[in-house]
Length: 100
Image (tube, rainbow, N blue to C red; front, side):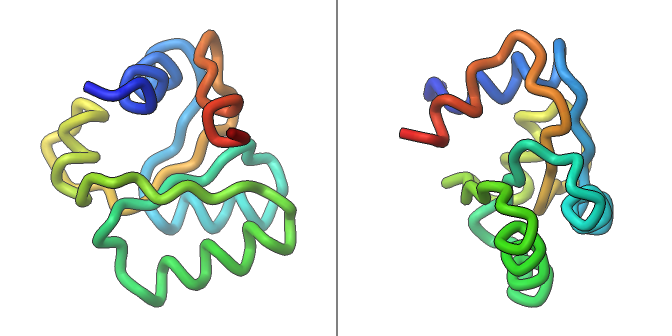
């Protein structure tokens, strides 16, 4: 497991994270997000919308190397997760990893 995966799991357990492309777009529009994460196979229209709102809000976007099924499994969910947003990283250092 990579360090990004470990920090993501820590953010899920100690911080505040919302899953799904609709929730991601909603939080990006509100400007409350710290980081948006999309899977490698996120649908193009959802990715473009997330990317556009992220640029407008100056919120970084990270493409996770895993597909949506693996990202859902990483999050401990029995369904695919194509996009997610981190509102509060908690004890995780994922925001510092993205800046690098």
